[in-house]
Length: 111
Image (cartoon, rainbow, N blue to C red; front, side, top):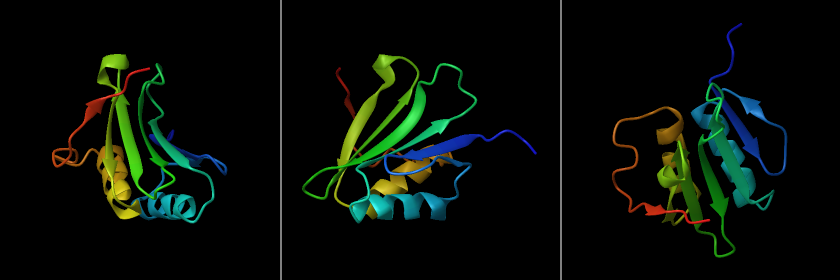
């Protein structure tokens, strides 16, 4: 059995190794239903722990989606209207789909 490439961690539950597109949608649906507020998907092979995407459900029902691939300068965010849009971005990042992030305005995350 090979080592997992991705790990999904929802606020409200256990981690999932190599989640499918459907599993990511189910985890986001749980958040949409009020079970926690965030989901993080990370690339397990990245020893720095700085290669991840996350979705955060806001009180108004919109989602903030972030991704980071390296240092703080690569940490960016965008806002989307609903769980389906958040899912499209999380899947695009997770499975490295072409142009997955091109239809959104990404702003730097400042800490």
